[in-house]
Every structure is written in C-alpha cells, then in structure tokens.
Image (cartoon, rainbow, N blue to C red; front, top):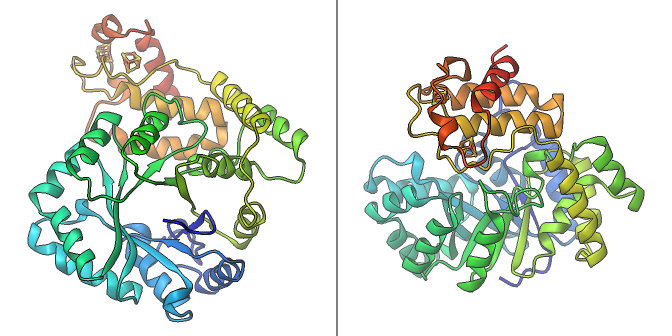
Length: 374
Ligand code: SF4
Ligand code: SF4
C-alpha cells in the first residue's frame, strides 16, 4: 500500500453537462482533470457501480483507461452487494465492471458500504470467497471493504475476515468523535488489526468547505491562501495509518486546489491540529439539538418517528447554515418516507422518558416540522 501520493480522485461527483441529469457527464472537463492529476504524479482513481448510475465507470474508461497505459494509474472499484439479488449474479456483476472500466484487473476492490447486515449478506452470497478467488486469478490486486456501521461491527468483520487487506472509513474532523460515526474508534480498530486505511468523506460531503463565517475566519487568518478544504483533507491525510484520502472533485478548480497542498504533502503540525480542533468546536457550538444518536427513544415511539435522524438534519442546518436547508429537506423526505414525520408526533411523552440527555423531544420535533415540512 505504499503509494507515493495520498490523494485519490473520487469519481462520484463528476461535472455534469445537465444539472438535472446525473448521468450526463462533462467528459471534456473530466479528461482535463485526469490529465492534470496524472501529470502531477497522482495515480489513484475510485469508482463504483452506483456512482452516476454506472456512468462513472464508463467515464473512467473513456477519460483514463483508453488514454493512458495501465501502469499510469491505480483503479479501485466495489462489489455493491446491495445491488445484487442472488449469489449467482456476482461473477456477472464483476465482469461487467471490468468491461465498463476498460481494464483487465482492479488494483483495489472493496466490498461496498459494509455493515453488520451486509456482512451477513456477503457471507451468505459467498462474496468473500469470490473476491479472494479473483485475487488468486490476478483480477484483483488488493481486497478490502468500505464501512458504515458501529466499531463493534467493524471488529467483527476484521476478526472473521483477516484476509481483508485494508479498510475505507469515513473520517473528518467533525466525525472523529461524533457518536453516530465514531471515526476515531473505527480507525483505532483498523490500526489494532494492522489494516491500512483509505479515507472517504474528508470534507463531510462538502460541509467542511462552506462552514460558519467565524470558523472560516480562524482558518483564513492563519493561512489566507489556503482553502477550507485543504485543512480537512490534510487533517485526514495526517493520520499515520492512512495511505489514501479520496476527494470527490467536481471541477478543475477543486482539482488544482487539492493538488496544490497534496503534491508535497505536509502533515498538520500540533499547532495546526489545535486550530482545526477550535474550528470543530465552533461548528459544534452551533448544534441546536444535543442529541447523541443513542436511539434509546426510537423503539417505543408509537408513530415510528426516526427522532435522531430528524435531529441530525436540524443540526446540519443550524451548524452549516440556511444554504443546507434544501438538501436537509430532501434527506428528510427520504428518511421519513416509510416512517413517521415529525408532525405526526402525538406528544405521548414515551421518548422523553428514555432520553439520557433529557431533551424536550416533543418541542424539538415541533420545530423540526416547521423547518423541514414547509
Ligand atoms: S412523544 Fe412523539 S416522538 Fe415521542 S414517542 Fe410519543 S409520538 Fe413518538
Ligand atoms: S434518546 Fe435522546 S439523545 Fe438518544 S437518540 Fe433519542 S433524542 Fe437523541
């Protein structure tokens, strides 16, 4: 896993020629971005079947595989088990990915978005055996998995499957200690099992690019020419057990910015780490509902309201500003589609009796309904 440069080009937020159609990719811009990336000494590309509805893989083929020798790049793709209905479909899924990407092998291949639930499905479908077999056949160089679940689930996967060579984790300076992500504990478990880490979401889906003004001012005062993204990406890349940080770059400006500080990467100094910690505190201080996502309140709710998921969206708007309202509303629609809406609360009080934080859940849900259902 000794790769010279720690920045990976994530092909999941590619530039579009039609903002309303996520499969209409601007191939010319991606070609220019890939050329810049490779000419500056970077090699790692990350794609997956769900990105841009499989168009991401085709874009890779057209913009990179057809235009560069195989030795010029490293390619990561994923077994998206949630797209597969039966075990017999796995070989065909894999073969179609090689074809869409225009390659004979993947350098890195990940079981996609693993969790306790998906561990059970992957085992039932023989997915671990399949990727190991592909490795023996030379169609995969390194096998690993990306992960979204609790530290306990991660411990279980790594204990049961020591053949996994690396793990991809969501790490950024806001999620490091966040109770619903627990990046730090997950990172430490990987370290204990001697598994190098790839970081995804270093800028928390873009949230750490557009932060509250007073937090941004702290960073700008220290280094006026450095972008807010640079602090977040360098934070992730500074962790000793991290060998790659993915950035879902969407235009040439982002590509040039990322290259500027990752070409001759310098880890954050102790002083800089303190500054980032202060920025995280400022953002955190804007949190409106002090919900720790323990979920004790959820099971007994007669209206099946996903209380902590709703509070997370309220906090996203309070911490990162009104600009996040539209995306919070869209997430809210999704989150509550088959569950209760905030406005369906009948004020029975069951949840408040369970909450270790003694939150006035009923009042907060009323506010959430006003914010997210209008
Ligand atoms: S008060 Fe509302 S949110 Fe709480 S348990 Fe009752 S219906 Fe559910
Ligand atoms: S019990 Fe309280 S802290 Fe826990 S998830 Fe529910 S609202 Fe959040």
